[in-house]
Length: 217
Image (cartoon, rainbow, N blue to C red; front, side, top):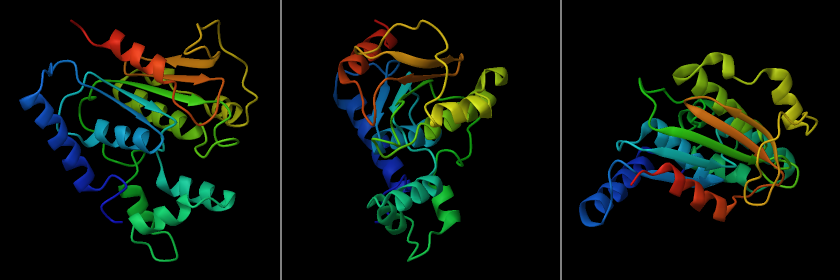
């Protein structure tokens, strides 16, 4: 429906949920971390840009960053997600590109300051054995570091294509995460991108441990 796909209502509901937890639970407002996978990763990116609560960090696994691209990818793959995108953007039979971009983190306005540290994760095989190509994470990483970090840490188009085609040369002896090899990692003060051996998935034990490392006593 029109209330899905990072509508104003979605963001307001997240604000309400976080503020309710802060008011009624044992919550440290300096240590709020959002972790999301797939559509949840997409929502996490949207909240990173539009949320009303200051975050410590955002972990986004296999996130969707651009609905227009994901519509085309899903349509060509014969996945039902293409129809879902048409409905949430109220597009009829033809995608309303402007509406899709309004709901896409890749095209949303960037606030003056970053809302916490952003950590992006994607399996190298996603888009082949899964539904969200790694390019969604790569493009959003580049947007963030160019706005909030060091532009020289952006990923060049040749490397982005090599990641998408799974021909990238591993860029260092990075430690594994959740028992998976890290094929490619890029670090910036504003964001990190980690491409690991896997498909469309989150590594829950690692995500929980990483959140524990990010919060401060």
